[in-house]
Length: 387
Image (cartoon, rainbow, N blue to C red):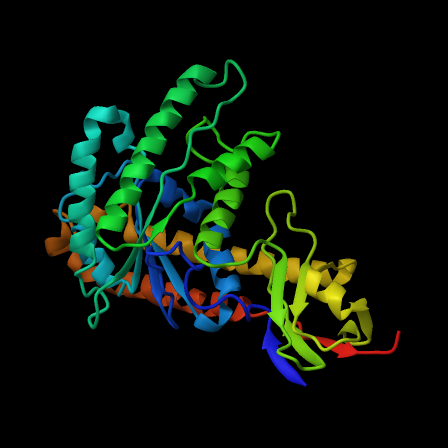
């Protein structure tokens, strides 16, 4: 029987772009670094993007570092004394892939600020794309669009008309960013409309103040960004039997959102020979249907199997959150004045280097644990059976 993982159709690169647009390629063992503003920085608080990325591409054994900084702009990235430029930290992390998040803060300058934003962003893209952060080849980069602002109930934020004006500005900067990305042959990950659709589709607010996403908002934004990177929709498996009369599927771990979404799994299997097939988990039959129905996709009615995948995904996210907190404490240490600042010599130099090395080791160990957890232990069999 043929063996396939559930991520068979999730090729190790971004989803096919529009004609003429470059794709972001993800490769085995890539270190992916997030750089940019508050929106990017706050991904680490919830863990949905990183855990979702690892679960979507388990065979690539990816790792993620969040180097974003609140209020950063393309041409304005203030740091504490002797902290070092972004390049220094991307090199320290050996970045293979850099996701850049800019445009939201710059958009407050309105139409008058667009020329400077285009110029600064283009300069930044050209600079980053030439850097050998991993020591061997130029960084692969992608530019992520800003997200819209959410209109909240009256009295809880800006009035609807003001939010509408802000979104006109934000969309203008998203379009400017896309144009600069195209000019510089850089992949552009447009998540503006996807996040706007999430705002429209959820009755409860997805932001804490109209601007900054809450936990549910980051679950939705993470899904939109992951799909822009080539991951399937949450709780969806698409595989091909390639003409064989059966296959084994390793389903993905499911990172549940705040409301335990997704709480289902939809499986589509194409290229089965004509016949009737049952999907089995050990002695348990999860679903049975004709080859045509499998090609169209089936929603599994198997609570125990879904629960096992969600528990695995929840465990993965907990490890990601632990690792992210340790990395933040190392990267943004509150006692940085003793580590890299004015008291590095003579005080900090005696005790902090081994402490920082220990932080690095712990973060690396959690990377390994997360990569292991991203691979589902479940193996299901799809077999031809009599009706």
